[in-house]
Image (cartoon, rainbow, N blue to C red; front, side, top):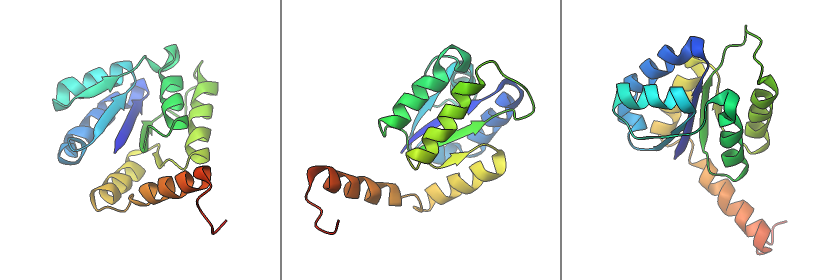
Length: 145
C-alpha cells in the first residue's frame, strides 16, 4: 500500500515515534511524506520515504493530487487542530479529498493505530475490490449497473 504521512510541527516527534513503533508494518509499504516530516522519519526509522515539498509550500497539495489519482491508499495526518495555519484551505481540501476518494484517514494517534493494525490484518483489502469495480464501470463491462 502507498501510505502518506504528514505532521504539523507540534506532532513531528509523535509521528516519528509512531512510525518507529510500527516499523515492522511500515517497512512493507511505500511511504510518502511532506518535507521535514519525511526527513525526520527516514533518518530516525531508517526507512525509505519519498519526500514531497513542505506542507505550506505545496506538499499538502502534492499529496492531494496523488489521492485524486488514486496513488495513495492511506493518509496519516497528525494535525494541530488548535492553531490557525496559513495553509488551512489546503488542509481542508486534502481531508475532503480523502472522503471523496474513500481514503482511510487518521488525524490522531488513536485512529492511526487502529488503521495500521487493520492494514496489518488485511482489513483494508476492500480498496482493491473497489478499484476492480470502478475499472469495470469505466470500461462498461459491469452488467450489474
